Amino acid sequence: MAALDPITPAGGGTWRFPANEPLRLDSGGVIEGLEIAYQTYGQLNADKSNAVLICHALTGDQHVASPHPTTGKPGWWQRLVGPGKPLDPARHFIICSNVIGGCMGSTGPASINPATGKTYGLSFPVITIADMVRAQAMLVSALGVETLFAVVGGSMGGMQVQQWAVDYPERMFSAVVLASASRHSAQNIAFHEVGRQAIMADPDWRGGAYADHGVRPEKGLAVARMAAHITYLSEPALQRKFGRELQRDGLSWGFDADFQVESYLRHQGSSFVDRFDANSYLYITRAMDYFDIAASHGGVLAKAFTRARNVRFCVLSFSSDWLYPTAENRHLVRALTAAGARAAFAEIESDKGHDAFLLDEPVMDAALEGFLASAERDRGLV
Image (spheres, rainbow, N blue to C red):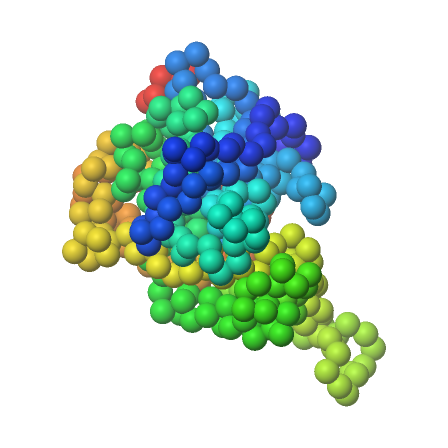
């Protein structure tokens, strides 16, 4: 793979929809004056057939391949997006937007409620993955794209990809689902609830109105991030990286971070609060918990994808991912096959856990590159 060189977005910013184009939500609520923050890379070709939508995970954002404006770190998927990479701006018009409910420019709980002139806070309506996708579809249309060559995403991004295939199959040619599932398990919901309770137990949460008081529930959000981050790793990965290594010579005989793994988690928590909003964390994790593709189709997953039989799917899982295990991905592939869709599947051997889809995994890179190359030939892009 090419080096992680910075990429300059071809376009982006914040798309503001007029009040007569509201976003209607599954909850029955409506967001007027919707704003969606996004970045694009590459150019749309003459017949508008090379657009790729990348859907980000829970703590991701639109800065998929360019430096993050807050942290200065490289884009979260710069390994796979760039010149000579599977998603190449020389061949693809790449779109990535911050989901609604997010905190990097799209309308969310930290936005100003036009009806009150104050931050939404908990007055922001509850959202779903389908609502996120509905907003993305509005953006894609506004950018002049009728049909996407591919919709690609991992984890929560993979949920959005599935929702696209259910709601807008006629607007996509291919789909890539990485390290995801068709619904949240009880264990997934349980971990999210621990995180939400940590945030709401922070005295600075102030019932979600912390912005009005000039404070932030940083401790609670940091603990939520720490708990979640454990689920993104695997026991072998933790053992390999940290084991029982100490931070210093000898034990402190107290409650400082004696072990390297403790220090690592504390760092993950403290750095997270600088770039993420606590209420956004509540809303987005709840959207993931509500996600269940089969629920509105009599509980039969294959029925959900009956309209997507012309979409080409690639589903990849990782052997050590216990958050969205291979069994869940196989269940999805069986449902796609039963619905008559073409679905390629591979389980990738890795000890890196759920986060493997964000890390250096040459087998994943090759599988993604091969699938996209095949789809490009079928699409007539090469």
